[in-house]
Amino acid sequence: MRLCVCIAVLFPVFLAVGVTSSIFEMIPPISGLALADLRDTFEEVHNGHRHEAIDIMEPRGTRVHAVVSGTIRKLFLSKPGGSTIYQFDEPGVYCYYYAHLDGYVKGLREGMRVERGDVIGFVGSTGNANERAPHLHFEIHELGPEKLWWQGKAVNPYPLLVDTVKRAR
Ligand SMILES: [Zn+2]
Image (cartoon, rainbow, N blue to C red):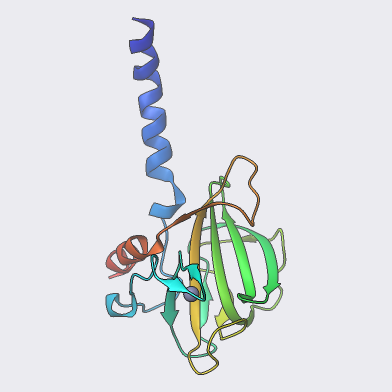
């Protein structure tokens, strides 16, 4: 009996968490994105690693938008990723990672709050990207309990971005 009550009380809570999860509230990181621009390369091996990301080919300088509202957790210059942004969503459940950026939008800084749709950077080819093939390398990570920006479980962004494009129509 007590177990039943427990499930009855908790089930709506689980449901609410699932429904409000930021991955279902994403917008496309590039405005005017079409389904033809998306290709599932999550499982491909790139530079000796499982890609666990999506590459969106765009001209250099194309504006990159925050896919959800949240906080700029880290601005990091890495050898493979070039100029990168790690953005946490509001509850700190998911981290959104944008790489190979040509640069950040003026005034962007760590700890800053951004709204979904805000321009945060520009497409480029920094890091190990081909200079003649600028693109946005985009990842989603489910953060662990410690909420470390460099750690998390990769989630395939492809089906989620397909949904954002369909919703944006
Ligand atoms: Zn990539």
